[in-house]
Length: 430
Image 1 (cartoon, rainbow, N blue to C red):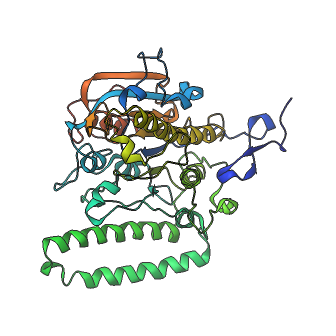
Image 2 (image 1 turned 180 degrees about the vertical axis):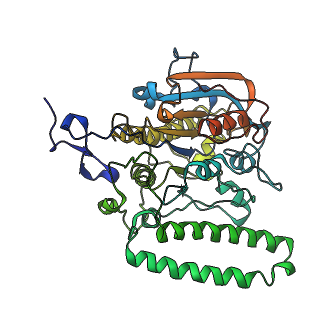
Image 3 (image 1 turned 90 degrees about the vertical axis):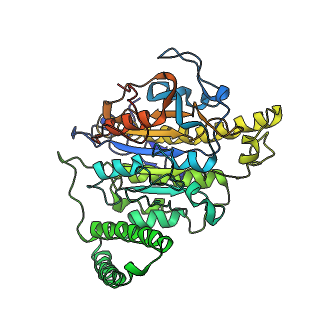
């Protein structure tokens, strides 16, 4: 039976909403090409590789216990194995900061992260060039490097937003209203004054203070860019493409003021904000830290789990801890599955939001028990607007540099680079 406009789907944050215009309703006439989006999702504490790596290579592979939730999305994923993040043995902090950078940021300057570079390439027409979200504050001041996977060219960490309501309001509240523009103009003038005054004492700062000021100025520049997007809204995408959901119609999805007590609800609300941002073309690049690199999140709410995430990752080959470790890792993959389910239902004129996105999912370390950087868990979801050959398991040569893979992702997203991080080649993704 042909569906009607009364057809509904379970939408963002559990709300019930009408489907966007679909061909089956005779409403989709605009076949203009939608833009390609990029997303990254970081999973802390690694995995037990035998529970992650699929059996078989190419298109003929079997899903592992952790990846089993993605079975219905076989045709939309690409699993890449045998990647080495920096070195075979390292630690949580270094491997976390190298996840999107190819090299770590502990006591040294490294690359800008690929999400930041991609945002510079494709984010100019978005109100929020790079959306960054997270679920956990850093454990302590000394672990800031482990609480972050996004970095700019000045070696400054780009911190994630932890509050769903704040993230939502930054993207959608008072969207380009006259009042919002007046407020943005006022904020911009204050920033200009602060920056002018700060120049007078910069030469007298210690090296530590200079580093902190660099971080401050980086945050100010980002705020300036965001205010400019309000004052002078970006032009529409080339070719006249417009999203099926417009930003000013997102009010019904505004999250509650308080951060959810439930870890699952919290994570899903943040994922829904990522979907909304991409769907409305408010952002084309989104990054989610599902936990910081030393996460001790308690997963006792899952059947069969009695310990926190970090404890299970250091399982010492104990059968019970290995079982709990697998359950927790599988829970993170289920969050990706939920995201893919929703993105696949969002029609963009003959292709889905999932078709038009490239999502990088994984961790900076493989075996949490030994802090191993060898054979880290990595997969890509989505078809990048048709540029990705999906539905396969790519098994690279043993200990292929993760930087090679990151360079290939950059090139796939249109960033012109010949080298990145510790790269000595590329990984074939076509």
